[in-house]
Length: 342
Ligand code: SAH
Image 1: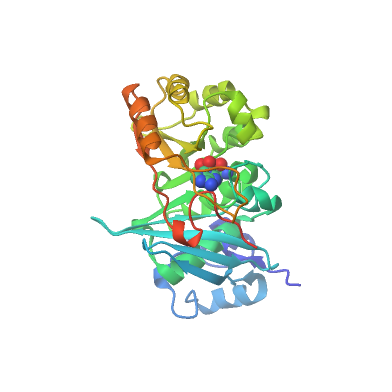
Image 2: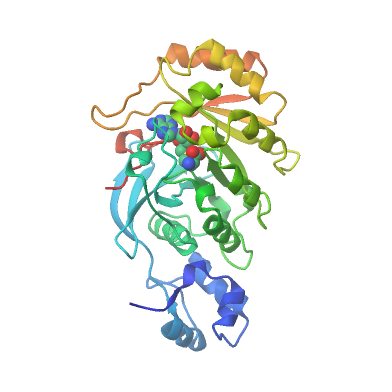
């Protein structure tokens, strides 16, 4: 076993503590700014090489499977040092200015148990460490680009519940948003939660405050707790109260995700209740028609396009800002709620 620390999760102060004699922010930049790497990886001075050889682990998660979708996105399976597997999705957007969104996993599997989500069926295998979250991103960026942060957005919408592993996610944000490194703007990072209010409280005190997305998915607790066991611990009323205190900036909106399941939560009464629950919250409602998974295993179906449109029209009439998320990578099992590494 190696006792070396993975370099990807270290902030400049850690490099200093490991004995680096020069400006640790400079070395941090060498590691974190991928555009300065050569084919082997970071280009290091002699002092840095000595430190790396003595105390640092520079290995990245290994890409073991790549599933390119017809829509230009790619589902990527990565193997971690212990053999555990996670999935990320690389989603370039060609229209207008080039931008890439990378969808990241925060855990191997997930403990939330949402009945409509394929990842839930794995259960929670383990949390990712901050360096594994960052290593996941770097492995994907290195393979598919971009190499710098100015065209990059991150969404924590892959495997896992990020707020059930909030310390590692915060640490990853500390590293990824540090201007001496990749320097990604916090408002280009979205953390999506099933409504883990303890983690949310912690996230609200982040040094680099990301954008927030919340998986609402039902407008009554009776329906929601059938779909999402977490609703028993933190019901809709408490969730709404917590969102009211979320420290977002004036022009920002909270994304509210609502997976539409045929015959379960897609009726007009649900639409009305949802709009009432949202009330005056500054939001963008993202309606996601259910993505099927499993051969015959998935107990739900997507509503017809007419039902999707009727639901959207009703919440729109009632004052919601609403879009339909056409999940990317559906043909390669890369879509929302279908990530499951076996
Ligand atoms: N655990 C976090 C991060 C995962 S984000 C969260 O719950 O927010 C994944 C998003 O996809 C969530 O909004 C979830 O509700 C949605 N989702 C899960 N399974 C889905 C499926 N089969 N089809 C469409 N969306 C799904």
